Length: 371
Image (tube, rainbow, N blue to C red):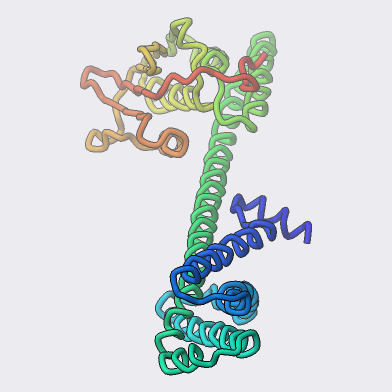
């Protein structure tokens, strides 16, 4: 029983306790007894016998009949029925319980009173009496099934959001796993090109590469990082690429102090820079320049990566490449429509990748530095 309760709690769907059910039962049928009690004073009936038969016995019988009805509902699985299939069952069940209530009251009057005149009148209008006695049970059914239909709707909504969150997390993990090998292979190629020719520079390159790998491992469990850490990653990457490309790569990295504390997706700026080097500067016979700028404007963070080159497909302003597609997908998963990534060919031999997203401050526990 405990495991079942814990499982329901974990689903986030509140269910009424036994105490709440019995409390509502007592209050509901107590109100029914009170209404009959008021009628008892309006109609010129006197005596404890009639009071018991008209007020107390029907309320007690209604309490017990509705509880038995609940057990019947649960045993027959009526809570899984569609409303159209359930409606005739509720009507029949209400009439049956109303008949039971009528028989209890008639038996009480026969047993507890001696005057049969009232009884004779009631038997002549038994159909109307049965109708009125069925109304409380019909109302009880409506409330009971309305609650459970609402609970099922809440459960379905919670299940939908849970599935969506799991799918979102799985998609984010997939995108991250696609980014890691892409980054690693390029970094290793940069180091490999230096080992034989310049061991000292290769040693420095290995140090930078180890910092990049440590950053990559540390950020795997966080959704966002401080821009400061991401810019350190970018500087390490550009330093490695500059060792490989030498004078063919000229770069600068600038960021406002206020922008450095804003949060970004890990490896996001690195992806833009890597794309600019691979598809821009490295493809130019004479190399080119690359600039990374980060600015904060009120509650927005804007990062621009400007590089020498041209878009491979001028008719595709959104740009191509797995890295950029993944970057856009990650932004959409985390920020929805609140963030954008645009790739523009200026027509003057430059390509601009511009990132615009909310400037949320980095929270405690986020990765603040790769060192």
